Image (cartoon, rainbow, N blue to C red; front, side, top):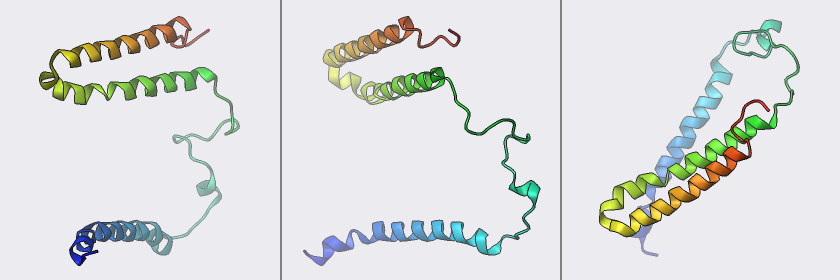
Length: 123
């Protein structure tokens, strides 16, 4: 390989080394410089300024996970609208038809989740 090609990677290597150096300093410096005065109160778990009540390993209903999953699913699908909106004029009618089909598929999924009761908080 010619030396010129390898020289193009020097800025990337420098960036990686600087990033690792800053991260290492940020992790090690507090251990070396911070005062260490442990007490019983400081060792307690912190929960929004309140004394924790109940066990930390309590179970949450599945509906919380279902709502989060649906949010992520529809949120990620919405990301596809941005590049389409940037190119819609150059793609003409075909892009409009394809996006219409995409929205229709999303709508069918949304209606299916709604009919199954995925959005109902209390059952």
